[in-house]
Image 1: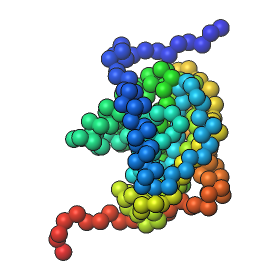
Image 2 (image 1 turned 60 degrees about the vertical axis):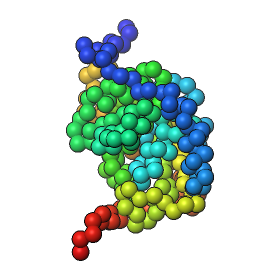
Image 3 (image 1 turned 90 degrees about the horizontal axis):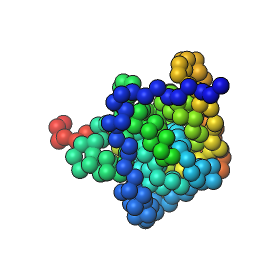
Image 4 (image 1 turned 120 degrees about the vertical axis):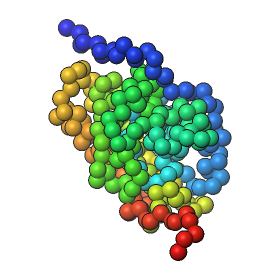
Length: 243
């Protein structure tokens, strides 16, 4: 007996698939810019499948994580990015580069559906399960990456970032010029496709596996590189002149 197909929403065909052209064309220039300013290392590139849909799930240490994931991973990545960034010129650039806005404070069905469609079209989608920048230790995480993998059957590649925020740096800080930045990809997880209805226990169990894989990838990266996670965020500098 064949598995039941994914149940389609009547409005599903109106969803836009993330754009790919600008992201693909702009990656070489973005990589040159990054490497002109920082010492970027990429480890485990062989773990990202060369074709087909893939979810890459990463810890979230600093502001640079998203841009590095999108432009410096072995394949272009459409990163689920907080919707607050999609304003003004930056928002226009993010949209043109195929990044996906997401509401971090609610279950954003539209963002998940856009990501799913991208995966079904053999693209790579990036997720930060922690949801916010911080210590990067995965002490808290959300199930979005696991959910997308269960819905589509694509593999999940765990990713670790080290060095993208200096110890004590605030959430929007950048590491000093010349800093060593390390992006490490771990072995892919194959969670298998689960047709609807998926139980909360199934999703939670899959999410726990994704979290554990990111933690282990980070530990291996620390052992290999000698770098460490930066610890808690520092205070954000005041932007006014009041005393």
